[in-house]
Each structure stands twice: as C-alpha cells, then as structure tokens.
Amino acid sequence: MAQLLPHRIHFLFIVFLIVSGMSFVSCSTGPTKEELAAKQKQERLADEQRRAEKLAAIKKEKLAAEKKAAEQEDAIQMKEIQIPASPESEKLTETESKLTPLAPKKVSTSLEIPTALDTYLITMEQKNISHPFYGIGDKRGFALNGEQGKYVIARRNHPLTFQVRTNPMHDFYISTSEKGWGAAAYRAGVSGQFTYNGNVTLTANSQTPDILYYGCRNHNSMGGKIVVVDEDADLAELAKKLDAEYARYAERSKIAIVKKVDPKTVKQKIAYVGMLVKFKGNRLSASQLDFVKEKLELAKSLEALGDMAGALGASQEAVVVFNTKASQVGPSEEELAEQKERFNDLLVTLEAFIDAHLASYKQAKEEGRKTVA
Image 1 (cartoon, helix red, strand yellow):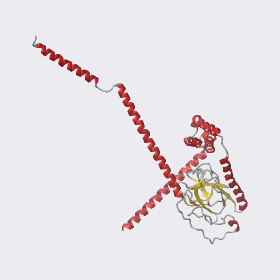
Image 2 (cartoon, helix red, strand yellow; image 1 turned 90 degrees about the horizontal axis):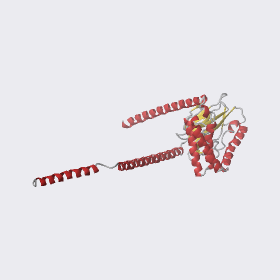
Image 3 (cartoon, one colour; image 1 turned 90 degrees about the vertical axis):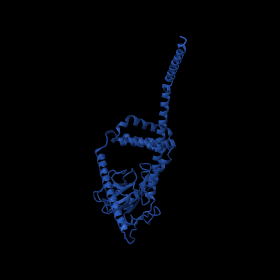
Image 4 (cartoon, helix red, strand yellow; image 1 turned 135 degrees about the vertical axis):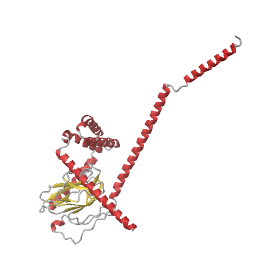
C-alpha cells in the first residue's frame, strides 16, 4: 500500500493538470459576443468613412471637371476666327442703305461686323440687362453685330445671312419658338443651320411667318426675334418701333434688379414650391420634375447668398411648370412632334459628324502615306 501511494499522488497530479488545462482552453477559445459586436461596429464605421472619403473625392473631381469644361467653353469663344471682308464696291439702293450699318464695328480683336447688306455676325457672350431674355434660361446669350439678342428685319425674297461664330456647345438655328432649345425648327428657305462656325441663310417668302426667332439648339432663351416683312414695308418706321421695344428690355431689367424683394416672401415661395414637389410632383413628367427640382435648389442657393430677387425668380419659374396645362395632362401632340423632329435633327447632325470624322481620318491617313513615301 505504501508503495502504491506515490503512484496515486502522481496520477492525481496528472488529472489536476489535465483539468486545469481544459479550463484554460475553454476560457481562451475566442472573443466574447460583446467584443465581436464592438469589432464589427468599428469595421462598419471604417467602411462608412472610406465610402464618404471616396464620394468626396468623386465630387471634387466632378466639380473640377465641370469647371475645366466651362473654362474651355469660354476659351473657344475667344479664339481668333477671321471673317472674309465684304466687297467694298457693292452699290446699295436707297432702301437697302437703311439696313446697312453706318460704319463697321468690332466685337473683339478678331471679329469684325460685316458690312454687306442683310448680313449679320452672331457671337456669344454673358447676358447683360439689354438682352430680351436676361435672367431667363441660359446665362449666355447670342449677340447680333455686337448687340445682345437684337432683332433682325428680314424682307421677303431677300436672302438674310448669319455669320455664326460661337462654339461647339452653342449651335445656331432658326425657330418658331422664342425659347429655342432645339424645338420648332423652321426649315423652309433655310440653309446651313445647326452650326457654330458657318453661315446660315434665310430666304423668306409669302408663306414665311411674320415672326421667327434665332436661338441655340442646346440651351434655352439665348437668341432674339426675326421680323419678316414685305418688300415694300416702311423699314425706317418699323425699325423705330423695334428699337423702342428693344430699349424697354433693358429698362425692364434695370427695374427688376433694383426692386427690393422681401426675404419673407422668398422664404414662403420656396416653401410653397417644396410643397408642390412633395404633393403634386407625381403629376409632372420626369424632365419637368427635374427642372422644378433644379430651380428649387437654385432658389435656395440664391437665398443663402442674399440674392432675393434671383431666388424669387427661380421659384416662380418652378411654379409656372405646375400651372401649365401640359404639366397636368402630359406632353401635347405638338410637343411630341417637336421632340421627334429634334431627335431627327440630332440624328442627322450625328451622321454628319461621323462622315466628317471619317473624311478627316481618310485624309490624314493619305497624307501620312505621302509623307512616308
């Protein structure tokens, strides 16, 4: 018995070690639920931080790209484009001389206003208060012989030529709609339109409407009015009336600028537009709703900057969309036809671009072969 005692003690010691080891292992199998939850939460916060940083970087790149594109667009307008001089030997009749500028003027260091009869230079610049659509549509506008949105008198059976020198983002065309934007293109007697660097000719006849407009295919309210008259019309009297009308645009804009707007009125109008979007937004088409939301955000931004008149104007433009019949019943057949017409025009333009590109590629390839030879 005495001999077996040490062995028993040794056995019990081994059992003790095994049990202690099992307890240690059971206590060290992994983190607790609380630790796992805390770790998952930390990883989730880290992922959210990375996503936020990524979105901020994307937004910064987008803003930089938009700024660069705007700078490039403005720079194109400043490129030197020489316009062929008109023959000085042209003799004008007494009637024709009333339509001719007294002396050639320059709208920049490289663009000279043409002196030929019924020929006008079209350029693009930031709108000022003299433009008929100042504060409406695009911030840029077309200038005719250096005068923003100036009217044109077109005599029936006498070609009218526009020397267009804008940039690729602002194609010039003739329309029956004062807003432009590619809608209601007028084609009868028109050649060369939808161009930013070329000549567009209009030859009115007895079927031509009394009022047409020149504008931009890609933007809203950039152009001016074309008044079509008979050959025997009193041009001097008509020009006098149109000059008075044109002068009123600037006076109207001045009044709008100096007129004080109550901030409370602006705040109420913005809130009203927000309610319209929330409760009646589903009545609008997708494009109309996007337009309203864009104007609403613009109004809020202008209000924050202290431009109450601008904020009120943007809000009112949004309200007009809800008040139009088209916003309640959807696009009319005429609007759908105009959209289809615009699509066809864009398709033709695209095909022309492709043809021009292929021709340029072919020419470059042939010139390269000649150089190698």
